[in-house]
Length: 69
Image (cartoon, rainbow, N blue to C red):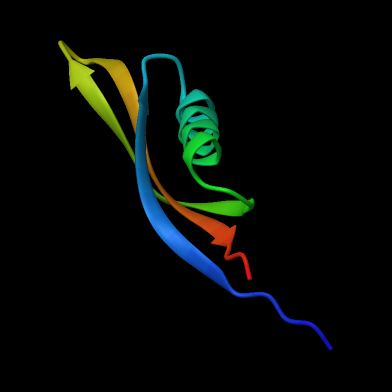
């Protein structure tokens, strides 16, 4: 029987467009640096507000990647 071991790292990403765009940017950046990214959990979401309007979307992600043998 084979097993795999993963590790979780925290990534924060920001977008002026949407939460979805922030998540995509965070996962893409993590995948550019880490090998074998297998998933991500959105741990936190928040918005920046200026003059009563949302100006940015921020997410904190827990990114999982599988460790190599």
